[in-house]
Length: 270
Image (cartoon, rainbow, N blue to C red; front, side):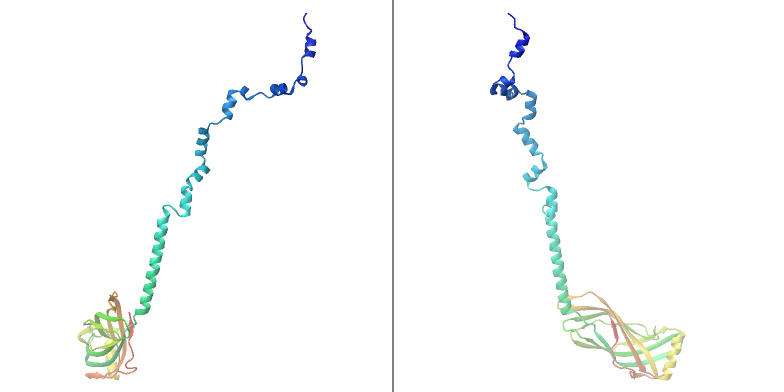
């Protein structure tokens, strides 16, 4: 006999009439019932995890210790030789500068002194302007005040001027060596040939001879070298200017007195 569906509906057990194990099986399916695609999405193989970690920058940083930029920033790698070279260069230059300063303080040369101690006039001719011919001789004492440095004079020449115009041609002097703390006397004879001058210079020289007092300038030019031990310096220009006031009468020949401040040192420029 067929049962009534309504009776089956009322007689079928509901969840509340099931045992706890049956409720767990009905609402919590076991893992073997999961869909295969869900298993592929949730499961990762060890090889895939290794590939992911191998491309991670943080992983690379810890694996290799330090990146290229960090090496460059911290002074390692190819920057280290450059830093060492700069340090060596700085130390070398500092030592060289210190050595040069010590040598300069010990051997620094002082300028030699030039002093005119005597003068003689052997003739002055102003009768043929605008030319003047004069022959003179001066005794010049040269002193080297240096304790450790000698001097070599070379390419020396000298002439006499009056009112900033040369009245004698330049005369070349032989080179000479000046020992330490020594004195040398040179007595060059200057002049002989006529030189052109302005009319004012010729007339002024004639007038000063009439008064008996003539202002002259003795000029020495050339080059010198310093010698300290076995070390020679380069060539330095030498310019010596001696301002003289001599007692000279027209037509007088011979040694003339030095007036004003005799034996005063000359101006020396090196």
